[in-house]
Amino acid sequence: MELAVISGKGGTGKSSVTAAFATLGEKLVVADCDVDAANLYLLFDPQHDREMVYTGGHKAVADQTKCTGCGICESYCRFDAIRLESGKVIISETSCDGCFFCSRICPEGAIKMIRSDKSRMYSGSFRNGMMVYGRLAPGEENSGKLVNMVRDEAKRVAGEHAMSVILLDGPPGIGCPVISTVTGTDRLVIVTEPTMSGLADLKRVYEVASRFSSQIGVIINKYDLNEAMTDTIEEWCMVQGGSVLGRLPFDKRVTDAMVAGKSVTEMFPEAEISLRLREIWYKLTEIAEYE
Picture 1 (cartoon, rainbow, N blue to C red):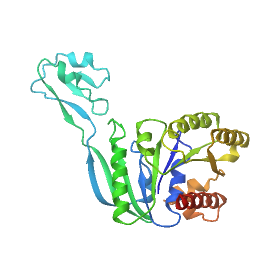
Picture 2 (picture 1 turned 120 degrees about the vertical axis):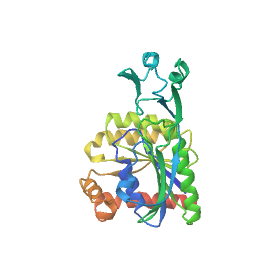
Picture 3 (picture 1 turned 90 degrees about the vertical axis):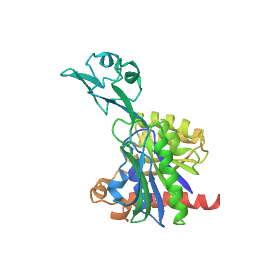
Picture 4 (picture 1 turned 45 degrees about the horizontal axis):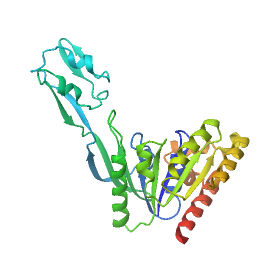
């Protein structure tokens, strides 16, 4: 089973839910597909057995021996990545979009494009199985290719270690990395929160997710902060034909556990939120067994 946990916006508790699932039950493969801001490795501290370079774009580099300081490239750069300093061109790596335009218009041929090779994918073991994650370097493009690379490695590792469950922690939103995360998965779980923005973003991500899977479940996190809005979200899910997997209460111990380097189900197994997470996880895995 390949199960993806996603959200319409950041801050809903998606990674906390994923971490709780990852430390329940049998050994599994966890893949952090939020390559722009991977964070599960901070919690699980995996051992790196494999490291791979990801080259996803290009960066402009100036040859100072050829540069005459004419300033043409600076005037045309739409990303403000180029500035003249003491008569020479200085190019910001993080601001450069790799569009090739400056290299084409330079009259002296002083600018060349090189492949960006600072992003990485890591694969290894953690305390409850195997973990794969990507880390995109600042300023590098995120088209979903690194996410595909992470998922391919997760499948390879799962096959190598005979693990039947791959748990994907997806990025928030509805962009290309999200589509790369959910495509071809067996089940999708959307984590939302009881706010107006939470509902609005749930609607957006649900619309996108429904194009890739009919097996979508919703978890309402911190439901007791606004129970009226929680009821509204549940009613909306019923109209869409989706299932609400459960409500999770607000609990400060989730943060306490993360500070200690653990999931809430590890550190506080008898807390109400842990019991509800365990119930949801068993529900998901049981459904997968019968499908």
